[in-house]
Image (cartoon, rainbow, N blue to C red; front, side, top):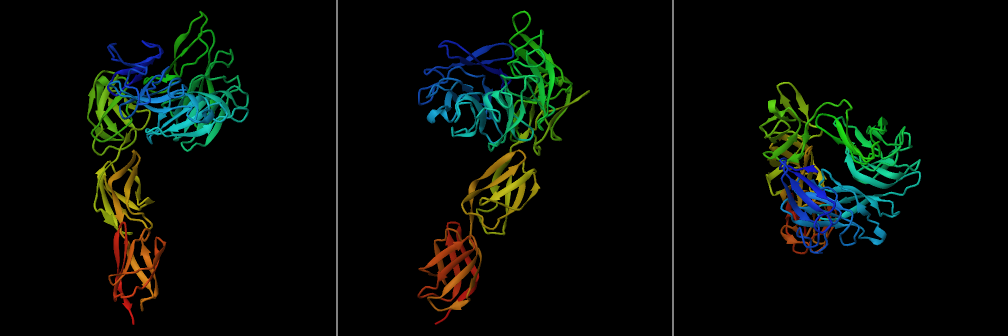
Length: 528
């Protein structure tokens, strides 16, 4: 099950009224509510009338909705990615195997939601070689295949489990087979889709993993294999982001065939399960690597003023909570569960819970979402500074104006000044990126033509004049002393050629674009 931001647990079953499974909610007191059973007539199925079947456990996105995949159902019967509101309305996001020969993947594993809001995951089958694929799906249902597994000695095949996001921003996952020894691999893939094999299972260090990796609070990744190791019962292993694998434990008579992913408890230890033991059953086990207790963030990104749920231990004696050093108000729900309010001036970074006797840090950074409330002007010229007003702007590391990077100064947590760069395109929103995310202005900024100079400085009608300046792209009108030129050409954003029209009068030259009208400070002299 997954813990929701409301403090309840959310999970799925393999069967229910219509045998296709159900999504349920359970309180910490054990009261269970079926949110929906997965059929075409329940859960408010999408317009295509096709609901998912054989659901994988759901998890709660940062928007509060539940997300999951099903390894069956959908338009093609090869699985879906779908969203369920906490009131039970289901929305189909994507049906797999929609392309010829299932080149987009088939039978998906659960994805994770990246900081860009998109979903990244793997499929067991499908892809160009029918050996699985890595996919990205936007919240609106646009899918991109990032990698097609090819198997053999140079690539993995049949990926298993969820991807894990490393502290380096890349994704890590495992394949059941393929690789140098044909016994599976650990791979790394960037959000842009560059895949690298970082480890090949060889039997001695385990083989044929059935579950993905778990990020540890120390920044390393932890996992298990189904078989292999000294007794061929599977192993527990650790992987550094540099690709160094260490076997931590070999399963034996105390349990074997570990196919369940590890879960790290906030006490620092790991927990898992095997499907076999010496008595013909399985075991539930704990494994201690010596990692210190930590705080887990249930929701790890939000705005100032929003509530964050924290899981840990020893919260009864909490004396303070801070977001990267900025103090926050908090409320204890129990010794292991508490909430905190993102404070004004909060900085993206580690959340720290301080008690009378200990200090616990979060296992990942909390991302403080920036807000952009207004611009000081609706139009501007190249080289002019504009003021951006908002919230959580202290950690600004990039500003885009007209689609181009602008020089800027973060004056305070609520204000940034930025200079319109040369080449900025008119009619685009201003975008601010901080350590906590990216936000765009509500309105677009008009870039007005500016800094107009020309040569020659005088001439009769019919003279060709070259005008220099900024923001000429899309010009719709050129005038000489208020008289429109009938012939002109935009060479580039900084250069425009025009013919002095008949009837032109001595006066400034003006250029009009969708961003506005810019006028020269000097006059063009019309001669007889």
